[in-house]
Length: 142
Image (tube, rainbow, N blue to C red):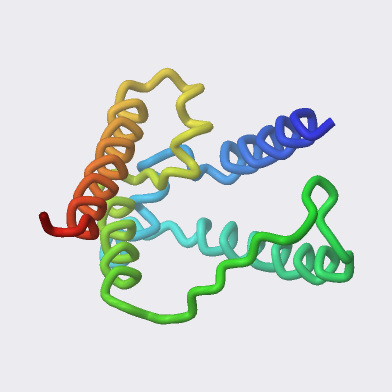
């Protein structure tokens, strides 16, 4: 049953991304172009998502446990450090340059555009490099 719910959740997410226009990098880039052809429609998409998430979280927290797990997986980190700020900045810069965010790029693979595959390939390489560099930095000196 869990895989079926995961599939349905992914389909709802993908359809929402497609309907909102977030798979279209031109629409996303126009959202960031405040001095040019600014398109504020994505602000409404994000605002709608925040409202739905707010209501959803209120309903979910009333449950004792998740449907498919023994406990909720809640982040415990609260520090705003250089790693968080740097990662956020890199995400924003990448989104502004490419017009894709990783979440929207995954359903956009269905469009068959080579730019989407290139973007996701770059994301995967970036994640791999970050993990490699972090493991080397944290490895004990010999």
